[in-house]
Each structure stands twice: as C-alpha cells, then as structure tokens.
Image 1 (spheres, rainbow, N blue to C red):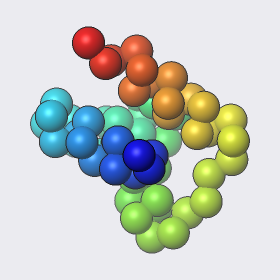
Image 2 (image 1 turned 180 degrees about the vertical axis):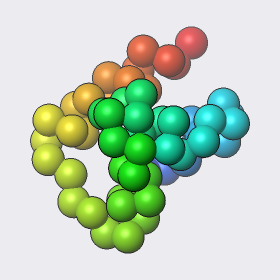
Image 3 (image 1 turned 90 degrees about the vertical axis):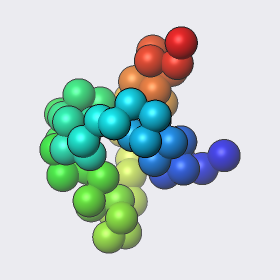
Length: 58
C-alpha cells in the first residue's frame, strides 16, 4: 500500500488535521499539502513518517 494512502486512511480514522500530522510526524505542517502537489520525499523522511504511523497503529 502506498504511503499517501496509508496517511489518508490514518487522517480519516483519527480525524487529525493534515497540518497536525505533518507537524507531529516530521515537524513540517505543510507536508501533506506539499505531497499532494508532487513533493518528493527523502528516504529518511519516509522512515520518520512510517515510524509515526507504526507507533499509532493500535
């Protein structure tokens, strides 16, 4: 499953605003908006996002 799909599912299931997700996951409130506009992520940023999601999978 793609990272953006996982993020979207997380946002829907938690009702977390996109800016809060970005701030908590990688300290970047513009993260999701930038991804939707085509931003490419570095491997380390992807790892940080995946770790954030994994820590909240209950």
